[in-house]
Length: 248
Length: 120
Image: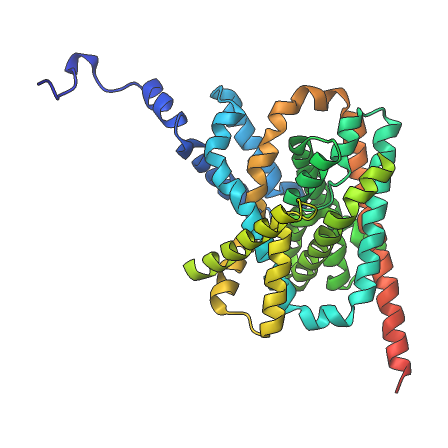
């Protein structure tokens, strides 16, 4: 029995190790978490500058690594799906900040609801009109429709309306990043000082990524952002499929 | 921590089951969130285990969006073709949505506060 490896072959080459590693889910999972942690530390070091958005940096870094190593998305997703799965669990977890604010929320239920419905309606109308004005294909318009709602819901609505779930995921994340980028200067320009109003508007317009940005700036803004995102998620899930039938 | 995650997963699963039987009008995780919210409000008490698990998930909310968004590499060509349409649609609609929501809410809140202060 020859259990010992052939010494003349030497140590496994770097390429062999790479072939082994990239075939396991470990690669996609590690790449996702490490890229995110690096991006997050850049964000912290930049004094939470909106342009150093951690999601944006992490996505660019991951795509760069995948392109350089010629790894396809399917292989990457085998590992990354474990992170993707927790998006649903994190959505359920949004109930906790809502429950903490329940009394305050119940007292202001009507103003919050009206503001959320107005913001949501404006978002859909502007997005669809602009896309049509620039001759976007119908599948792209359908994928843009739910982009202000949190990703798992947006993806489900888009598929119902004849869009693509992946395109919607991309548009949803882009919306979140844009929202996180513009929120601070835009709200300053509008002269809005109340953290509750600032957070709520960002949560309605830019879901989880906007909420993450709001949390990193102010705790009260973050709680109201998750409230805006939660309300938009619930009512978007009910109303947007009807809106899709009407406008598409 | 583990107990909190288990509770979240129980509500997520319940949400998925309800979504399945209502033919997916409202997605499962959202139903799970609504059910958990009702449960917490009725009990008037947030168990520390749930709070701890939820807070640690929400503190890193951004990371969960990354795997789906990396899918942008699959659609590079069709996204390039109509790059102006979707980028402008997203930028303008997001600015419009933040502005509308913030101005509406500020106006509505200032009205209710004024009418409340008039009562006594």
